[in-house]
Length: 354
Ligand code: PMP
Image 1 (cartoon, rainbow, N blue to C red):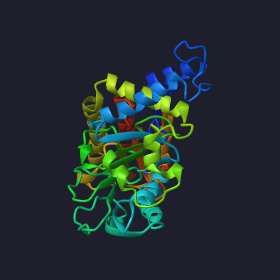
Image 2 (cartoon, rainbow, N blue to C red):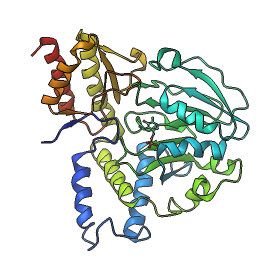
Image 3 (cartoon, rainbow, N blue to C red):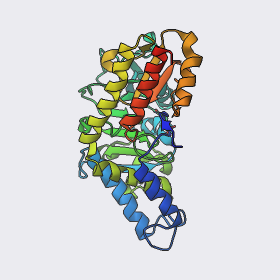
Image 4 (cartoon, protein in one colour):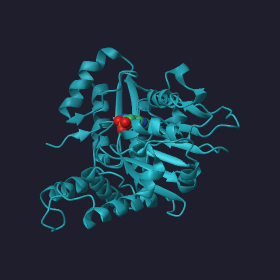
């Protein structure tokens, strides 16, 4: 029986993606070949890659003249070092909003000076810092738009003078954001884009002329862009599944419709957290994520009982990250409202002790 999957990633994808991608493993679009055996230079895959790249720009509401989209490998973690390798010349600024930002900072330090201009570490990252000054000579400012572990998100994207970069791994395609404020956006695919194995990088074309040092080919954005994201063999199957998942998103009404659904799902859980005395939310209310909902029990001794209820309800993947404890419900795009309602009912059952 299909579980209600609240995993933080890899995570649930739409049923449409599961059926179409599994069919393609046997045979892709009546071509007599499986998606797993076709050349990345075949006309079928070249089209899939082109579609995936253009759909990603379309969903972010960015235009093809100004931005290029790449599907790379190495996960968001590879981007931590790649952005600095290509663009950290004298110094760059970072806002530390949790474990993933901290890792991005650590990797950037291999390449130059990092100004950590703000951090919410003082409160175990339960909020987004709003006050900071960006040194005028910063090569870029790096933020993490949605913090998967702590369940916070930037409600507003800051207006800054230097190029703005973001790790959008867990928030991409979840709500309307003015992505034109960013010069570089990257995201591991395994939440709202598709399965693990591909990493989306969207980059302003003008930035490609500002690579600040000699960079080996595989880590050089310009080379990947010049080769239309096919410098070497791309992850053919993950890119195909990403393309299907973006097609699905477009078919249901795009970002506008998914944002409506996501806000409804998030409201259902946050309302219950705020109402039900058995639970308390972790993130500061104004910074609450609509993708990762973090909460704790008010009485830890109820843990076994709640875990049993959750198990019986066929709910999977809601254990919190070890640095926060408690629970985390990741309610990515493909998760249904019904699954959220089952979770809310489970929370009510704990309260009623049934
Ligand atoms: N950044 C964020 C915000 C994440 O949530 C994750 C993974 N959960 C990563 C980076 C790391 O991604 P990857 O495993 O693709 O390197």
